[in-house]
Image 1 (cartoon, rainbow, N blue to C red):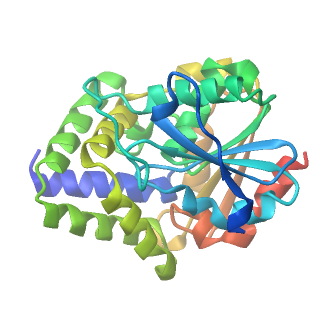
Image 2 (image 1 turned 135 degrees about the horizontal axis):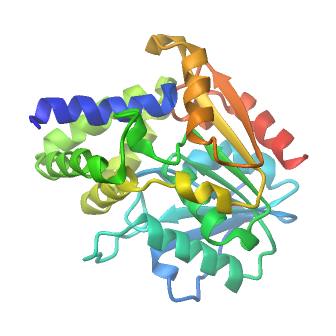
Amino acid sequence: MPSANIRATFGGALLLMSVLVSASETQPIPAVHSNSQRISVETQGSGPDVILIPGLASSREVWTDLAATLRKSHRVHLVELAGFASTPALSNPDGKVIAPAVDAIADYIQIQHIKAPVIIGHSLGGEIALMIGARHPDQVSRLMIVDALPFYTLMIDPAATTETAARHATATRDWLLGQSPQQFKEFQKTSIIRLAKTEAVRPALVTAGLNSDRKTVVDAVYELMITDLRPELTRIKAPMEIVYAYDALFGVSAASVDAMYRQAYASASDIHFTRIDDSFHFVMLDQPERFSRAVTSFLNQ
């Protein structure tokens, strides 16, 4: 696939995630388990446990506003994946990022004796939350999935399979790895414009992306694109809230967005959908008050 087409496809897929789809209180917890280097975690507050997982090449700082509210009544665990933002990358010869992070968070829950936490994940973090719910169903009490699908390549091809998705994923990986540093920087800036409607939040998102390890990011994109979790949704015991963004600027009807999410999650048994309008992909940054209310309502159910 020509690089221009790959750029359009990948940028469009990211875009469609939105369419179709105080410091002294912060205490890092030293990880003591075998997967500890896969993630870093900071905690704030006390009370029932909530784990927050950011998305691709994102910093835990995307949760700053929400954490400031939650820590008044909850113990908040702010996760960051190795190789993303400020957390150092690992040597990762097998190219796996998402599945090992799932195991690392499951180990963290067990080792830290956290009983049935709520997990909230955005984008790639939403995929991680789904995988934890499906593969470690007794470890979580509730799941909130923010602007994420169980199979991302559906945004490129509604009839996609893991086999056909591999072609898109390989082309995307090759294009991203082939970019010069300047091209990669420009791509970060262009992508964030499509993903965050609020101009003031974009510089921090770009910085997090540029500070991320490119190979880790590319490996995660590939893994994300070929992973179809729809067959695993039936294993999830925890109630799920799917929060997704919509904005009329994308030129797609709200009804089509609603239908796409419901179809993608059709096999899930205990699920509720909340659409937040006038937002791009980073819902928690574009509509922080509405998002916070949605989380509060979810936690109080």
